[in-house]
Image 1 (cartoon, one colour):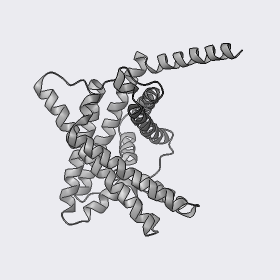
Image 2 (cartoon, one colour; image 1 turned 120 degrees about the horizontal axis):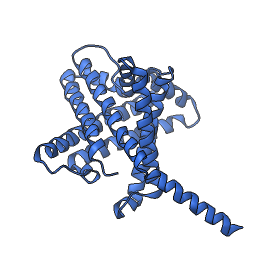
Image 3 (cartoon, rainbow, N blue to C red; image 1 turned 60 degrees about the vertical axis):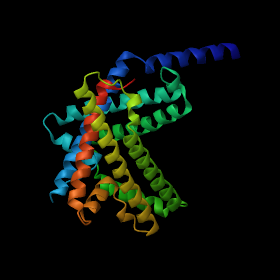
Length: 275
């Protein structure tokens, strides 16, 4: 009976691995990079508005809300959700089964894939909430979550660890951009112009994304230490806080352009990614 159960389990695992590597899922997963890229371009565009003194919610929630307000918004939201969910499934498959080649079988590669699976699953959940008409202001949601955690046992410790984790992710993005180590995840085009465009967008985008995450993590830690959870307002609050600093609008404009570059890089990655 044990042999039969083991055989069934192996067959199920092989079927799951085959499904996770199917061509259809790969195509949908590539679309997930493109959908995430479009949302990051919108976040960068909103941040540019903030730098000019205008209003807006410069985070993924605000970007999804803008997407929903466009013609064909419901269709765009469901398409974006499906693409991001497919990419989350693809990365989950890579985390469990590994990708092709020795590099993809390494433990670090699997951990990286697991992290991306979680990130794209959260993005898919955000898009789904707006598609179902239950989307909330991301700034208020982040602040409410901080309040809840701060009142819970060991809540402040959890928040400090979360802030440190976000800062760690920011450093990872910045180092990845500075070293252009993201190249190993791409099939670089042979023509010089597209190659330079892809690499430049990647370097600037990763550096900007890293700096933005550093700001968010720092804000979470400061809000926790000061016991002022209302100051933990996510990316939108971090960017608006940056705007109030000396030369803030100029720094915010540069960061906004970098986020647009990161979005463009993800859109290009939809074509050139090693899947």
